[in-house]
Structure formats: C-alpha cells, structure tokens
Length: 117
Image 1 (cartoon, helix red, strand yellow):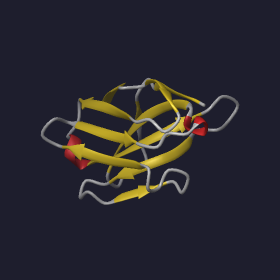
Image 2 (image 1 turned 30 degrees about the vertical axis):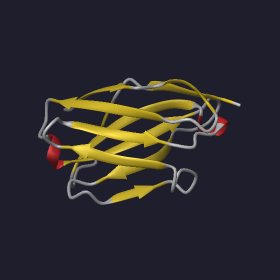
Image 3 (image 1 turned 90 degrees about the vertical axis):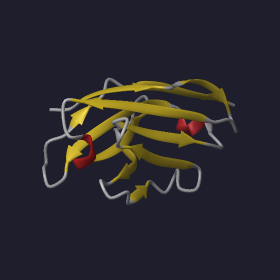
C-alpha cells in the first residue's frame, strides 16, 4: 500500500498556472504507474494524466498541451504542472499510484483547484 499526500492546489485566475505535487511513501515508488485524476462537483472522477515507471506519459484530450506530468524517483514525488488554466479545470485533484501489472491502486486525499473567470 502506498501513502500519497497531495499539495499545491489553490485559487487562480483563468490563464494562470499551478503545480501540484504528490509525495509517496510505503512502496517502491519507481515501480508504480502514477496518475492524476480530477472530480468536479456533480461529475465522475476522470483521468487527467499518467506517467509510467519508464517515463511514458498520457493525457486527457482536455488538458493536452497545457498540463505536464513528471516524476522524480529520487524524491518519491510526482508533479502536475498546469498552465493556461480554465474555469472548467476547477475540481478536486487526486493522486493515484498503481504498481505495474497490478489492479490495486492507492489514492491521496485530494487537493482543491479553483480557477476563476
């Protein structure tokens, strides 16, 4: 089981930037597929971005070109750099960790991102 703690959320104006961080402990971080998900009020949780142990990335179409996921295995941390933020990016953002080849995943507690117009 991986323990995940997100940070970096907040209130920002449209067009602004935020960087989310997710610190992991309790597992071999470098072996986990790490992901960011988000859930807006009244909507289902959706994938934002994922990064594999090898550094391959995948993004939701809504954020491609604006968000960048990265990982620092030495710090057991995954990041989400969010640029050109839009009001529709407003949501609670969750960090997710899944060991490669496993269906079991761990979740963080979430961090609120609010983008004002």
